[in-house]
Length: 290
Image (cartoon, rainbow, N blue to C red):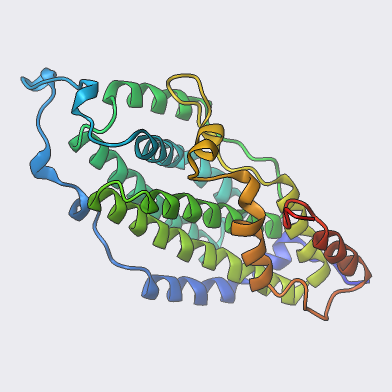
């Protein structure tokens, strides 16, 4: 039987992997600026400063694009909660430096989307602000997880975010929205790669323990859900709009990462790990046709 490693042992054993991947990530990610994507010349003041307040006819975005961008900005608005939850597990050395880098990148996404929505008058700014206040007041708290679970869940979350933003870009709403969504999706994909590489390293250290964590996170995976101003929830509406459908998570989120980790072809699993792999082969969340 393989020996399970404690979180402290894993933090120490994987520290060099984190350091290398952080350096690679910084070298790879584009050095882009949020202000470059915002059509500032289209902006004007609201009534408080002598201009005109928002009215629905000012928005030139389709309903699906408005929904997708509203959900994206509200999810990003809850960054302090996500930072706290990630920092609980990754609070030392290069791990903490990665938490800082990831937080800064996520904050950049929120800044960009909100600035665009306001300048373009794409959505009701009052409703959006009220939704932000409610969403952040509710906050986000994750169940206590061990380190490998945290890493696997983060890899799935970033892969899911990339799917959502690629779908938003595919709407071809307008060149600016397409560019914003593609830019953020590219960041999501690199963040998913970072977390996935750490899971891969954990698999090499403790295969059975790691594959058990991966399977558990698939079973418990849920994308962040936002309650919108009209009382409806983002998960239902995004699925209806074809932006992000949980029914396709196996195909678009889980299966690509399982393949990246060579879950079904590895030969280093013990009896416990082999049993987990066999269960994954018939898991309807991974293979919808099963």
